[in-house]
Image 1 (tube, rainbow, N blue to C red):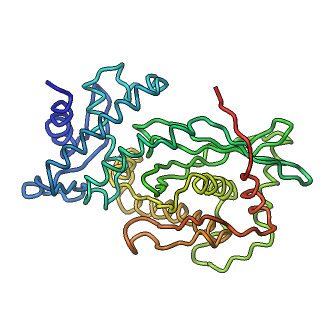
Image 2: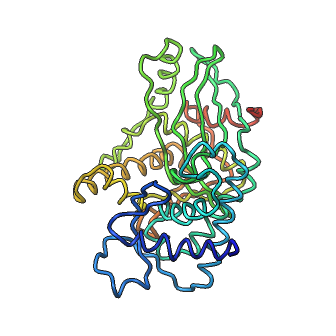
Image 3: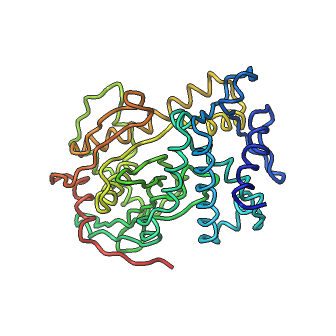
Length: 358
């Protein structure tokens, strides 16, 4: 059997029947709490709680699924570090890798993606094959030093992370540092690049470090300069609650996106299959989980609202569910300079230097 047929058989004959059952999907002993159905199953299906993949053109859908799966297989071959993750690499068993790939992509689909699965799969394929990400992989950018009572600089780079368990194959990592060697990691940004669009899927805060060193406490205080002379008049959104570390990570990321010629940020959230799995794992009822989920999503989008507050040129074109289920932001060619700390951080990224981390 050729690879193309293996991919289609894995999806239609192994994954879909399990995903439309009440027990989730089992692959080589690993249980995935994934629940979804195809639109062709609807007439015989009573539980409409699961998201529905609406296949309007099966030939196009099949080819998109094949292209995506092959791109993921190649991506894994280029990143041997994932061999340490059993449920991604499956000890090189190509059949199990295919099954995992055609399943896990749906954890990262929004409601709109389920209605347009061909476009979704093509976009995910572009993420894996993006030349900018490949070029930037582990190339550390070092900003200019920002002078002051406690001088600091920033380090940022593109990395890969678990393509099965995380929302995207690529992640933007950054840190605030000083010349004495102290550093504090900023939140990670999961993203994908396609055409001139940059898709943002998550803003992950790492585990907070306890018992900071004296130099790290100083860096922490430096970051809070971003709150100086900031006046908020958006009481319902309470963007003043956004962490300054998220603001710095997004500022560095904005500069990175600009430098590479991308003209829009499309901020994604609310992934049905992922949400259902979390609900089952946390063992909470639907109403409570929805309340928690709404709070998390609101906080996520507020981070971008605050970014736009500091940089009005990053205009918010639409909020989720106005145009589609994403927040759309314009990425300008230039940003006007202002003599506040967050603009100093942005300016420090220009004409910096970089090194390749081994």
